[in-house]
Image: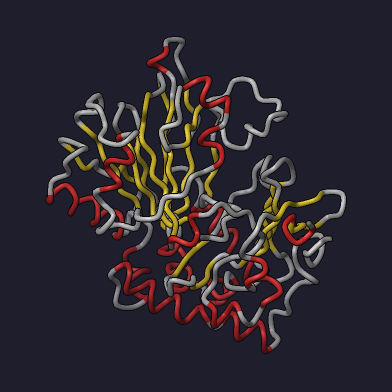
Length: 389
């Protein structure tokens, strides 16, 4: 049976002026207070004063031995992660040393469990896919991201292997209800050229918008501000969500994607303030946009850990060489907000703070946060496969 509410996951647009919607949008005030505190600002005017400087490269934290991170190295990583960068950039000096676990990235993150939110790794189903095993050998607990030259989508692998073309800005984890807290990347091998990974702290950008256009900022909290549709394959899902919200950890969070061929992203066009807000965010999501940062993973053992609920990220195109050591292969690991989210799920909801989620249970209630849902293009809705059994 179809458990969804309609073709786009909602039963008509929320009335932007009715009492229920205004109660939901009221979390914008909490977002401002918590966002300012998180980023070290005392008031919104300070965010406007800080402005949107030129894009800059995040200086790498040099890790002398990834199996034994020193206190000063850890302090630098934590500072970057929780700072305005919302991303740690590290460079391991001994990438060829054998790991104590199964991969250097897991050794590194295992030592950061108490300092950064990397205590709850999730096992992605594609980590053990036969295509990856045939190319890289036994699974090592990380997902391999690389240029899959031939992709017909017939075996379901297309959704995870990437091309060498530009990969536009997004938060990771569509279908995971916003529960992916940190995204860790590690270069197993690097390309011949290109492949800049760029980041934009959208919590800070939202606060900047609040300081310059408060109505546009508040419109980002509409319960159906954005609908993201991945229409095909096992990963097909349709998610309707606010762009900014307070999550179940009582933290400010942003969920955003730039419209691409595979991801069909739509926004409400009947609210002028939201149209302005979306235009601003799309500009801020471009590679090397004002106020953004970037890293260039061009050495084995280089990597990053992004604060997924704060920063959108993307990558410019890259060029692989013909030799094995000239091909870009990244190891990726997702870390969740809580242990209960480490179980695989594929859902149309979003983990919003219960106070606000209860206002729109048809979009963010418990029923829409667990299980394995799949978007049926013929029916035009998400189906809960567990409920249908």
